[in-house]
Amino acid sequence: MKLVFMGSAGFAVPSLKALLATGHEIVLVVCQPDRPKGRGQHLQAPPLKVAAEAAGLSVFQPEKVKAPEAVQKIQEAGADLLIVVAYGQILPKAVLEAPRLMPLNVHASLLPKFRGAAPIEWAVAAGETETGVCVQKMVERLDAGDVLSVAKLAIGPQEGA
Image (tube, rainbow, N blue to C red; front, side):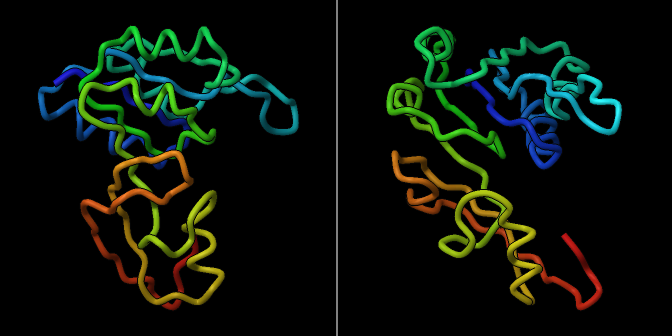
């Protein structure tokens, strides 16, 4: 299948690598723009961009995914599936409808708990003893689509985010 992969954070990198190992064609990787980081405020690429470029993949970094040119580029990729892992922006309906089959989100919590940003940190801060990852079909509401797969993970008493 042809895939568009969207993400930015380091959490997205293992998913990208796993998909590369499947033999599916990743036609486009979409991630946040490079941003200034650290004391010197030097421009730094998102971890997903670094991994994607190392794999020889095409990377697109729109400032706003809702911008018409960003939506058009994603639509023109002709993907069967859109895979989203820690992207960091809410996707417009036109992007969610771009893939032939469906958009999927890999979310770092046991939904419906800890929707939105920083789900790992919130699970630890709340004193949870278990967390996990869900794969869900994306809908227009944030982290509200049908959960298709769940993997659970214990949180030890000395673990942090």
